[in-house]
Length: 260
Image 1 (tube, rainbow, N blue to C red):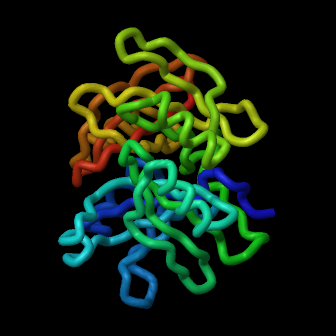
Image 2 (cartoon, helix red, strand yellow):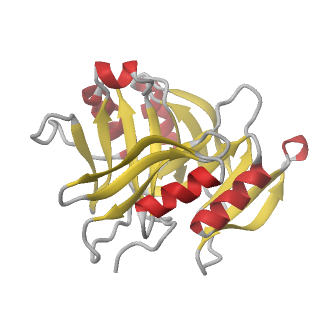
């Protein structure tokens, strides 16, 4: 059974230096990113966790950079119909960054933004029986939490619920920053992430927390390999530990680990 409409399907790192990204994330998260790109021209490398692929690394060439591409983590949302979804997103105030196109034996996809300007991909896989567990809450090396920083949380929540069935299922008050709104997808009330107001001085966008076995060990690896830890480690409700960091290229990401 394929991933249902609105579920996270894939995660992708855009980077100017795929080899450096491999060295950093392999060490910090425990991945085995492809050492060389697949044949075909574009520098695209699979991110391999202990149990299979969870995402990809795309090397940015000069043309992409000239067109406005920048190093960033992006998420893919599964949709039933790419073209219909893109049209609905535009009608709701979003924009198209890459019009819908097909990749043979992979699927049809497009890059869009929500009405607040946050980019993401929408995709329909080429086969109906293909599934992805790139998001897997408790699985090491997988995305464990999807967090949206947005200038308008209420509008964003309304947009993602209408377009993708991603809905608010609770909240944690954060004082002047408003609510940290937990989100779930479909009929399940299990939180897959959260939506919050973009903090002062921060950029808006989807952010992703990768699961690692030990938060302190991961922190040491980040700092030893050219990254920076901006917040944490800190304990969160439920006993897990998280941190927020950037890789040597300045791309923001998060880590989550079990209680010590």
